Every structure is written in structure tokens, then in C-alpha cells.
Length: 181
Image 1 (cartoon, rainbow, N blue to C red):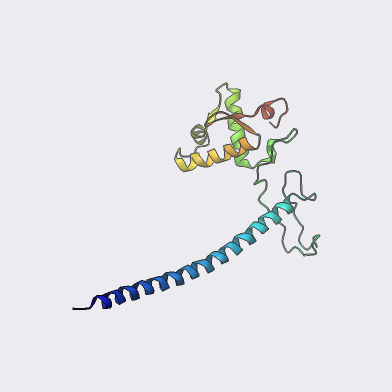
Image 2: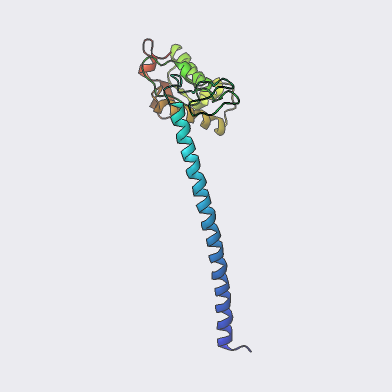
């Protein structure tokens, strides 16, 4: 029969091995975390730079960079090998007087048009489930939540109003005379 001290030494050795293994794993995770944080920082800087370029005075009023013809040297001294392609109007600008719906992407324009049609018919605010049906989408949570996200973004940027939770209508300024429609 093993001695009590021998059993304690076995348990201590097993615990020490476990601690050593966990420390190695913690060191590996710390190194991976540091690498991920550097990558995240680089992407954040890249996003800020792209935002600065898109909002520069040489871009058009909708916040979309203009195309650079092939072979033209840009202000940074870099020769463009192909036209600069930016997804046109992928951001929702804040609504302001004189800004038309054409400043929005096609998806956002469709939402505004559907709500505008609904108002003209005197049917009141539109829900996201109703929007999905109007657009011919399957009325499933994924599609409805995608529309809800877009509608909420339009609300936060002043294009839509949400008089009741989940019910959307045009903001007064947008639906007013000449107001973006």
C-alpha cells in the first residue's frame, strides 16, 4: 500500500503539470490576443483613412469618392492601375434640406418608396414584416431583421420616423414640400 506522503507527492506532481500546461496555454492565448489586437488596430486605422478619403473635398456631395482614370497620378503620387471602385452610396447620409433620395442606395430608396406609397394610400406606418411582403421577400426573421436594421438606420439619420415601436413612416422633413422625395 502506498504511503500517504507518496500519494500527496503524486497529487502535487499532477497539479504542477496541470498548472504548467495551463500557463503555456495562457501564454499562447496572450500572444494570439496581442496579434489580434494589432490586426484590429490596423483595420480601425484603415477604416478611418477610408472615411477621411471619402469625405475629402474632392469627393462628390453624396460622400462617394470620384473615379480615378487609369494611368492618372493621384494626389498621393500613386499611379492608379484601374479605376477606383467604391460601392456607390453604401452609407446613409444624415438627411438635410435639399438632399434627395438618390443619395441613398437602391435598398434604402425602395424602403422610402414603399413607405411613401403607403402614406399616399392613407394606410399609415409600415412594419418590417409588411415591407418584406411588399418587396416579395420571404417573411422570415432573417429578412425582417435586415429590413428593420435598415429602417432603424434611416430613423437615426433623419429620413424616417418611428411613431410606434416597429412601425415606420417618413420623417416630417422628408415628406414635406420638396423634402427629399
